[in-house]
Length: 147
Length: 143
Image 1 (spheres, rainbow over the protein chains, first blue to last red):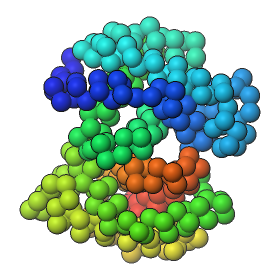
Image 2: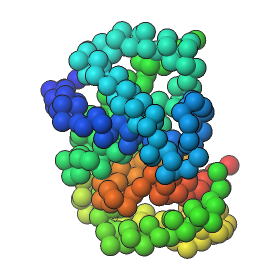
Image 3: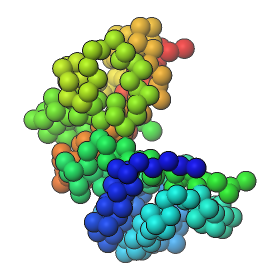
């Protein structure tokens, strides 16, 4: 069972309450596809991913970024049992999507970096630690059902 | 994942921009690492003060930044160019190489905070590649 301090809980809730999903989602996913080009392997039917400019203006990438970010809403609402909350999603990523779980970390890192840019100095070391702890649990839960 | 000519140009260009806030970047990156990854404090038990922005943290952050600029000057001959630093890390400091990635991540977070417009995904990729090469060079003599 994960233990959350009051600070961590309120920090995570506040981040997601204030976040502009339509901005952060696309920015995080497109950054991941540019910085770690091998992640493009999962998006063969997304059209033009030929260069950074194409990726960043790709509408399917943008839409998927928003989808992924909203996927975290349930984790935010169920912080005390993310593992159970994500059991089905984990099976989906393993059995249907065949995503190497290491990619979750790559996207998580890009999301952290985009959030830092949006929040500026409000993204203190303590906030970063709380957010990365949340992401680590999300990532672990998503990888849990792989076999 | 070696550096292309474009990567090298991007790195040199962005590093020039970083110079204006270099000390801050070094201090903030190291401070942040010590808070977000507390296990890294194990390497600094000999410092009196490990709090963010303390004198030893600041001094060491600047030392690291100078190492990065030196690496950029020798960007065409990493790891050979960083031989001295490599031997230092291998035989004296013996920092587990996983920590190079951890520090790199904290630096990337700080760079995006300080330069939200300039730290584009393409620049991010070039800097990430460069710092990975630097880390490899530093670990060159480990075994």
